[in-house]
Amino acid sequence: MGRVAVCERHDSPRDPQHLEDVYETEISPDTISKITDAIVDELTDWQQRPLEPIYPVLLIDAIVVKIRDGAVANRPVYVAMGVTLDGERDVLGMWVGPTGGEGAKQWMNMLTDLRNRGVVDACIVCCDGLPGLPDAIRAIWPRADVQTCVVHLVRNSLRYASKKDWSKITKQMRLIYTAPTVDAAHDRLEEFADEWRDQYPAMIGAWERAWDDFVPFLAFPPELRKLVYTTNAIESLNARFRRATRQRGHFPTEQAALKILYLAVRSHQEGRQNPTGRVHGWKTVLNALTVHYGDRLTNPGQPAEQ
View 1 (spheres, rainbow, N blue to C red):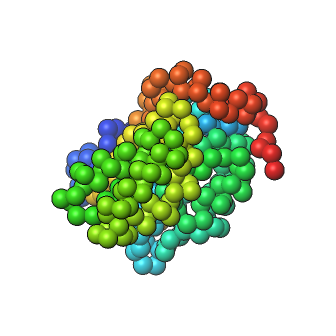
View 2 (cartoon, rainbow, N blue to C red):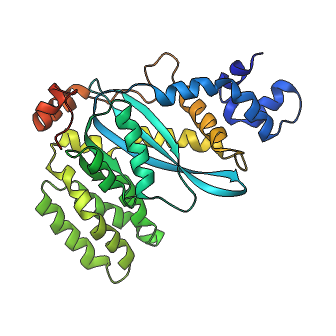
């Protein structure tokens, strides 16, 4: 059985037990890394492949993995997923960030990579309020609408609240992000703050800090709103990444981590253009996008105005 075949079979690159069963011996993480070296060239080609000139929607997220670099440390791996003009979701790239958080240089390197591979514009970019990222997005794509990820904002809010209050709080937050207008959403936020500020000030503070980058999608028609606040595709991808990494104590190198995460993406590509599928009801969404962003979608090769 060839090395690549072993890596491709079912969840083999994510499951050391599977490899041990194949080779009838205990296999160390370093040995698994050597086995997966067969896909290094393919990973490099994937990282450097040309991209579409415009993505109506980009989602940027992160997963934390342990990597040994002298000492073992938690390192973020940033993931960019795009939705094409055909409604297909595609993982555009993955980048390992530094220990100890994010910075403007990290974001500029990541976004410049996308730009250099052909992405000259993005209409809506959803991200998790990471420090410095919105400014970097606007520097690369000046006309992009930067949108705080609604799901992440809700989840981060619940971190500050007792579980006994989650049900009520979740219903109230839903009233905010499904409000018909910005003014109506702000009214719901004020009601939400009046009820919970004394008990959970950090939760209310999270909403108030995120507000400027939260409200853009409230100007969108319902079809676009749902595309923004429904993040099932990237959540599904993150679940695959977690399955790929949870049985490993750590990765010996950055490349070893990227290889396994790439294999997690690749293993779901057979018979499909991409691993995450097509947006449901895309034609309706595309019509709404065209009304909202018309000239940018019909001339996707034109660089964004500076």
